[in-house]
Length: 220
Length: 225
Image 1 (cartoon, rainbow over the protein chains, first blue to last red):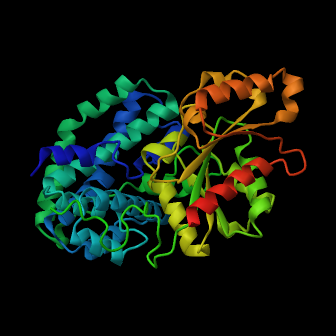
Image 2 (cartoon, each protein chain N blue to C red; image 1 turned 180 degrees about the horizontal axis):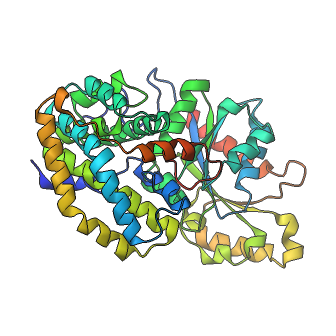
Image 3 (spheres, rainbow over the protein chains, first blue to last red; image 1 turned 180 degrees about the vertical axis):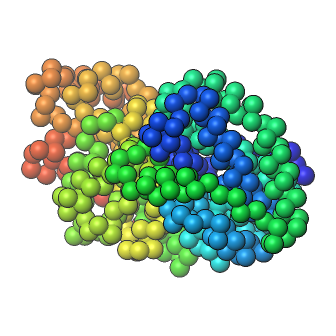
């Protein structure tokens, strides 16, 4: 594996569209559930161990070489909210563009051709990791990290939260991110039957409501 | 790895200047500039002036609403299927420069839905003087400022004012009311931009957008030549 390639893929500046999404943080801020760094930490922890674990395992499985189209179906089955399905596919399409330019491979080409409107983002990210010579743990780490870094960046913008406090929240979560990535990769090695299906119902519900807001800063 | 052979099959990043069938794709022109300088009004006027002779589509980048897209729809400058809004997550300059993926997707979707197109106008969300478009997204860019925003803006410069392919100084009709010196703006703009063109517009007047239309026609002629 190339540790530097992992840094490129995990970089928040990797141009794959994530900057326009809050990972559910915008409705949580609006509802008063995130008001400070402590609330942000609780939100991130919840997202990491639910939606984050599920997405990390899908990415790890794609990095291992499991059939991406079956993984895409598995991702649909684990995403009950139509708004979040649409978001996952949109971000998957954007990840695909950046991945094909960065680490072109026949497997990425095949998935792009089979899902021109976008496969679920974690599946594309996992395949991108595979094309970059990375392994399942790397892909899972990448997803675990972006599961919490996205909301943290969004909350800095939404609440004018001190950016040092937000970054400290991410640093404190590092051991839990490692653990989630480890569990995700382990599950992926067990094949389709072992893929976790942890979910956060409140994130699903608020995503549906958020998608209907006439005025919002983030796309999701 | 075969990283240097990324142009086999369909283009990965859609920056290629030709369509898969070998024809030239639509010319993409970005319009940037500060909030309230008249970007949307300029887009609307351009569509009205050119829509009978060209197949046009518009991408808007609203910062937190769909106001700009809705303004264009309400004024019926183009049918709704020719207008797409991109959401920018509080960072309009990121969406047109650092991470252009959502805008490229909108451009591709428009080509697919209503193409073949001759011209795609990509309007940025209102931003600051440093906002410029990526060359991976547009082929040429227009920076729109206005006389009421302060007649010292051309002198202040910044990437938008100094490097845009066309600088539009809008709302000249307001100059006497806000004490802006148009000659000074023209001199400062010329000093900042060298040979790059500058036009003055007042969209309230008859054919107010004319100078921008003339510039666009030149760009289109060069693009399809």
